[in-house]
Length: 69
Image (cartoon, rainbow, N blue to C red):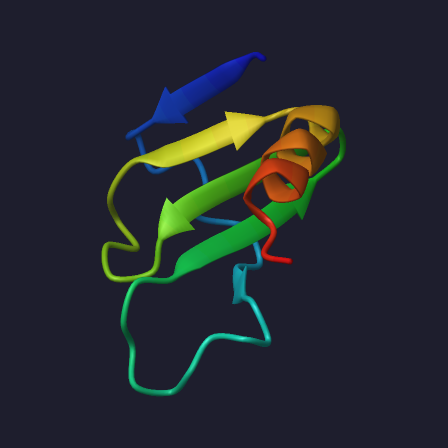
């Protein structure tokens, strides 16, 4: 799996969204943004913090491995 971490703010133009299962209370949430050929993931509590970038296949494998029953 090829995952890259960025901290340089190069994700500023992305449209970030949270899961529809995220509550309004905050908590531990990930935000995701997509661009051609790349999925970007960050901590919703730290929008200016590090961003993981990965290929769509790696993201799909992560979601499949962590999905609840």
